Amino acid sequence: MIPALVVAAYLGVVLYIGIFASRARHRADAEEYFLAGRSLGPAVFLLSLFGANMTAFSILGASGHAFANGIVTFGLMASSSALVIPVTLLVIGTRLWALGRTHGFITPVQFFRDRWECGHIGTVIFAVQATLLVPYIVIAVMGGGTTLRAVSDGLIPFWLGGAVVSMVVMAYVFFGGMRGTAWVNAFQTVLFLLFGAIAVSVVSAGMGGFRSAMEAMLASPSTAPLLSRERVSPLYFLSYTFIPLSSIAFPHIAIFCLTARRLDYFRKTIVLYPLCMLAIWLPSVFLGVAANQATSVPAIATKLEARAALATDATLTVDERNRLRAEAAGDDVILRLVQGYAPLWLAAFLGAAVMAAVMASDSQILALSTMFTEDVFAFYGGRRRFGEAMQVRTGRIFVVVLTIVAYLIALEMPQSIFDLATQYAFAGYAALSPLLVAALFWKGSTRWGALASTVWTAAGVLTVAVVQSTIPVPPTAVPVTVLSLGGLDIVTRAATGMLVFGLLPVVPMTLMSAVLMVIVSKLTPRARPGHATMAKYFAG
Image 1 (cartoon, rainbow, N blue to C red):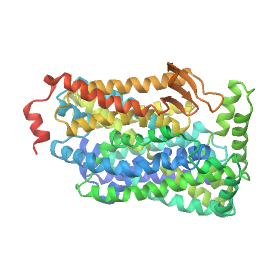
Image 2 (image 1 turned 120 degrees about the horizontal axis):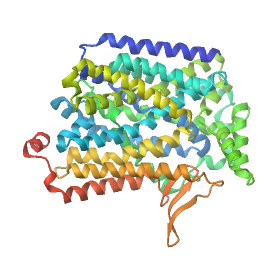
Image 3 (image 1 turned 90 degrees about the vertical axis):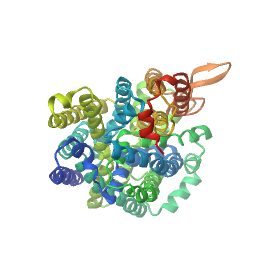
Image 4 (image 1 turned 60 degrees about the vertical axis):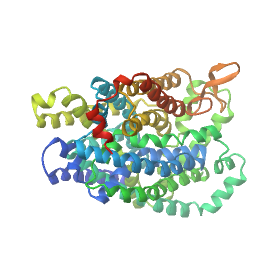
């Protein structure tokens, strides 16, 4: 229980920082609570913005995916993200900041409503964005339960670990708002940036050096493909270049862009972001791959045995396969490595560092709270009738309700953290990115084009959910055909999820979203905003 107690102490520190930040408020209004008064400094802005992107997906999810698929995980997500995300911050984030500062926007939906002169269509956009953000929040609850269960060696069950993390996050978001969230994210980002180098050094020493481990993997036909791209097709690899488009479309990232005190704070963030990506993803992926040789760690040996049984035993029943998949899951593999090779005190510290990444869901919870109070409560007259203080209280109540809902969903979620994020949250928001681009840079876009793009995205994510819930995971590595035409497989169900022409659903979803935005906007020219609105956004 010593590592678990250290992690508990860390949670107490985080809770104190978040609540203490509430005392540093410059004023007690909605803009202060939801945007920290648009006054974050350069260091806190960089660390909190980066930390908001680096959730349980980046450490637990990345290492778990690398454990099963190999070093290609780094190419799938880290390399493309390190390029695409800074570019979107430069092109889109800075323009959002300028418009938010000039016109007082707090949420993306406020901007969409004003830009396209639409009311209820903005509510539809809010509903879709809110629904798509829930899986990301669920990931954090799953990560918290997984971390505390692993560091306590099973003494703290998954449900209790998830509940503890949910309560802590809910508390400091409830009291601290955006300022508390930003301060906590900055502290946590520093902590998990230190995690990678320390964990790699300690685990390497415990395994007798990574060189011998990698040479052993290369010598074995079963593990050699993990050090190449063999297990991932070119089309599947290409699909992941679309995933980072989701970053700037996430409401919590767009809202974070509005919190900087000055525009030039983006410059340092854009330059340093790829280096921070390298510091997080390289150790996580490398440790996930190296875990395939950590047979001296009992928990990892059990996972490898379960994986081997799944690959070789064709007589297994569906229930037996589901049980073995749960045993072979790699979301906790990096924690098991640390537990197996690090001294107890260091394992406790590293467990706290992993928890720091896991708890980055605070910004998503606050973003949804902000959107609900601004885009629903205030838009439909709540602030006018009940006042700004009631708006803040409503946001806090929404934080509590949302956290409880995410926790209950996490208890029943069978998917891995990596697959849950890429199949739903990332895919959906990548498909919504044409919405932002059209609103910011295309004069000819209309509200009906925005509605068509939004509805298409919702339908696409719903289709993926239905296919994956109704069609079981294939018993072998060969995908099962769901829809074909003339001998050509159009939709297939693979172990990693649904595929369309061998591509992740994010590709057709994003491309069709952009096409619909263009076509429907061209067909509805009378829905374009008036001259005053166009002058506001395209005066230059």
